[in-house]
Length: 209
Ligand code: AMP
Image (cartoon, rainbow, N blue to C red):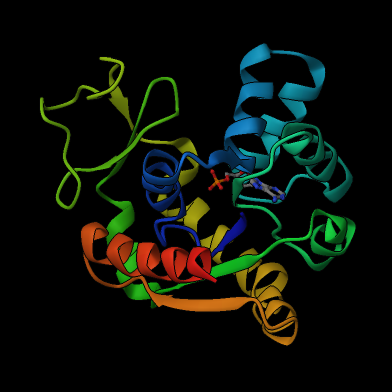
């Protein structure tokens, strides 16, 4: 099964993907994670990407699209987390034959409140929330023992920019996939367990067909 997770910054795409990966054995392909890996390499390209991410802007469509295509090659089941984010990206990957797009719908006020407590482990792979999804041991990742940190692009001024771009570039994808008849909307306002239970139901229903 090929799934896209769509939703504003902070809607829980990463958390939902991690859980789907565990329960259904889907590969979790996170665009943001792939880009942050490039940044870690410290190449000229990585440095350019870092500047864009830290401002809350979008990395050029061609670059992200190529990274994603390379990553999904040969994979039968995957979740795309944070991709596509523009109509161009969606059109350029139409041949992936996506089965399901889950739209995590959540009001902006709720998401902004979530950001203040959002943390990520130093590898960038596992996400937490101080209030809603705390680690077992304070400040330490349950999975790899690395220190929890706040992402630079989770700062309030960058969040504002990310939302502006989300409304302009990504929101049109909701109608795009609705018209294709593959969009399912899930209310992403409740706690992570409730949101995931609703997502899981949608995936299980489609698997039965
Ligand atoms: P995320 O981890 O999904 O919140 O992404 C972090 C940042 O990476 C975004 O704010 C963008 O700067 C960049 N990014 C992630 N996915 C994409 C994408 N599909 N297209 C362009 N830029 C992206």
